[in-house]
Image (cartoon, rainbow, N blue to C red; front, side, top):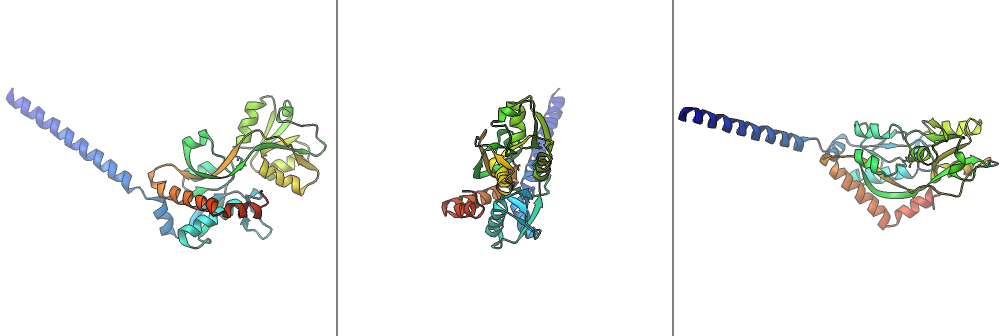
Amino acid sequence: MKRVLIILAIITAAILVAGFYLWDSYDSKQLEMPDTYKTILERGYLIAGVKEDTKPFGYKDTDGTLKGLDIDIAKAIAKSIFRDENKLKLVSVTPSDRLIKLTTGDVDLVIATMTVTPQRMDLIDFSHSYFIAGQTVLVPVDSKITALSDLAGENAGVIFGTTAEKNLRTLVPTAKVFGYRTYNDAYKALKDGTIKAITSDDTILRNYALNDKSVRILNKRYSKEPYAVGIRKGKENKILLEKVNFVIKTLITNNSINHLYAKWGLR
Ligand code: GLU
């Protein structure tokens, strides 16, 4: 009997020791996860996901380069990391692929007119907000549409994956929703009469009204859209998040952000 007890005690001790080692190696593996900030430093440049059809935040200029407020923020982050704003690779993203491109590691961060929402916060982390937009509607200048609710029963354009798509489906469930991947596709559909309106952020839609007198935006706002930089979750992304927050806070406290707003006609 005594022998059996001793054997049992040895087996229990062995299980405990094995468990301890397994847990310990799991924990050190966690610690060994490559830190994103270190990876960026070793690579020698930052990879930022930005828009290319969303003037004045991220758009392709006639010379083919990407420009806009979001791109200037990406440059400020690259400058803070490398003392050189050109140590930056810009990758085009759309509202429907930006979360995938971020979470799969195609980009280090996303600066793409992206609103902070509780649903997105379940998937990724956000920096401090650097701009606040609001949802509105773009219509032909002679349109009878005066409110979002007027889209009931009408063909209404949205950009797939945006907050405005979700809001429209919730607030006006009878609207016939036409989804587009890009703003330019939605705009073409508005111009050829396929849709009666486009709903999205005021700052993005206003640009179409500024450049085309045959369209206008409604004065009403249907949401508050705080824009922030998106970063992957996890402790290996913490240093990058702190760096981005430092850059945004500095832009705000030294007033550079207001110069950027003025540069891009935002205030
Ligand atoms: N701010 C809106 C969103 O995050 C629209 C953004 C966009 O079209 O990029 O869904």
